[in-house]
Image (spheres, rainbow, N blue to C red):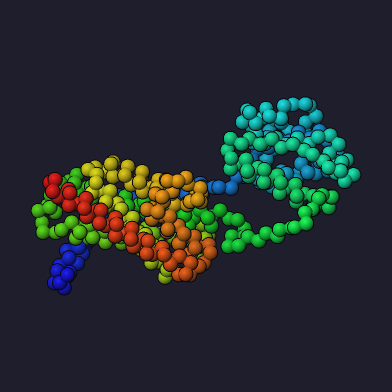
Length: 382
């Protein structure tokens, strides 16, 4: 490409970008929503998304009158993981159906402690008890089972009660998040979702608005080409998206107290590429739709749901069934979430995820190309 032609492309693209920024600045409602909605979305994700189950309702049927069983029941409800169900009580000497509170939905588990429980433990005999768990929610059932197992082991160790020990004892150490704070897992993923969907929506609206107002015909009549138009709009909304990204990142640091421990240069480059990929994705969505409602649906169904379900934000990618798991390779949020969690949790360097910028560059080029093709088809139809 000749230097003169390159300068012309840059000049036209920058002129289009300045026009887009001027239109955005004059629309006070759009400016307010562009920065208020990401802030509110970040708050909802950070405070409303919880994977750890707490205050699980449990009914205890204690048919033993010994001190050990009473102390054991007290240790169960000493934490905030389990809570007693009102109306059933801690102790029941009546032969009630243990499955009844689970069937009625009042409890998620029923613990049955048989008679002679305390005496058998003190005499170093095997003491059995029964735990009935509502397994309609598999994850919740697993949490209840593991929680009771851990509480039982801790209770016996603290009270020096005899129990069988294996020849191999595992000593577990939690790295990077020893306090198991959910914010350290949720907030970096929420940053990825917010910094993708809102720049994409804004850029899609900008292009669709040109169609609805009829100003797109003036662009067709001018000498500006489809790549110059897409590049100009992408530059403008990339700058707006970067402001949104900085806003939600600082929100995560100062409101949710998630410290930044990674390489700031690596994370900044990944963030810029990620925001740009979201913007050109929105331009592609705008080039394929004729009104703002359709643009919202495309961004929501393809962009938002894809980033939510196929990125590893809530559950690991290995849990996604084949062949749907192949679609996750085209979701930019999948790669940026790794970079975000590395920057806010693990604190790795370039060597940790050196391939992420390369993949994001490829996605930027792909979305830019399909957006340009969409604009060319629109121009031919016009």
